[in-house]
Length: 276
Ligand SMILES: NC(=O)C1=CN([C@@H]2O[C@H](COP(=O)(O)OP(=O)(O)OC[C@H]3O[C@@H](n4cnc5c(N)ncnc54)[C@H](OP(=O)(O)O)[C@@H]3O)[C@@H](O)[C@H]2O)C=CC1
Ligand SMILES: O=C(O)[C@@H]1CCC=N1
Image 1 (cartoon, rainbow, N blue to C red):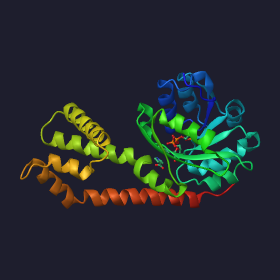
Image 2 (cartoon, helix red, strand yellow):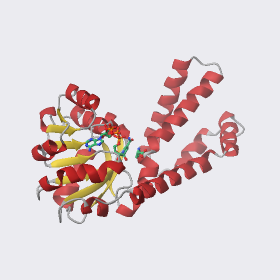
Image 3 (cartoon, rainbow, N blue to C red):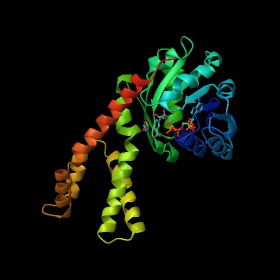
Image 4 (cartoon, rainbow, N blue to C red):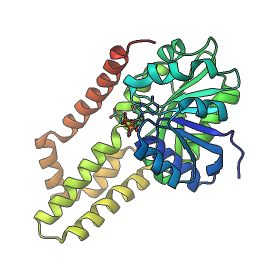
């Protein structure tokens, strides 16, 4: 097993579970190295079933771990950090995955020079196929802090360093992105059912089509995705008839607007957060 420091999570919800299950399945951490806190007993039960140490007290997490992932909703960040602030030492690394919460806001809630990294992962952490981007705070160094984050999130997908100013756009593309792709998959399967396919067959074909198309594009990074699309569109054939229908319905405009709306919302979240 690659050695990682003990890992803690403040907030044991959807993302904590996705990251944790991904890390455990890759054996990057062992369950007894992990501490999770949550205010909801039901979530602590889920965590205990994963074999990790679960507590209602965030201070226990910070006492027992050096790499602490902040995985609460953005509006809870000031209260969650206030609870543990006095326990944060020079050896700690705080990794925030909270949408819209800036490095400056995080640093204001922590002791001076605390090492903080702002990260935007997505739910496919669960299956080792996440798209993650991260930016270092002023007290964090490329080595060891950036390297640790790259190891952690690289183990469950792809992890890219970006400038912090891009993290709201990242949230709009890949943080929220799985929801848009799932909506598309749902519609693709519904279309199949509408055209007469059994539901299970339609869903399997829709999921495999999205998976296979993503794999094909990732394995040919020098080919523009529009060119890959053109290869499916036989002149006068079925595909171009369908893609014209999608153009008329405004698919691409709707997706672009959705990404921009999510990015704006991430920015709103940072303005709505009262500093501690
Ligand atoms: N879901 C996603 O796809 C992604 C989410 N994120 C970010 O990750 C963060 C977590 O999101 P997600 O996992 O979806 O949210 P969840 O609501 O599923 O998880 C957050 C958990 O934290 C608990 N909680 C609330 N207050 C505290 C506290 N003081 N200490 C410890 N735990 C607490 C919540 O309990 P209760 O519900 O009872 O309040 C909840 O169980 C958010 O900031 C979000 O922006 C980032 C990328 C993707
Ligand atoms: O919807 C949200 O706010 C979170 C952040 C990115 C994905 N889910």
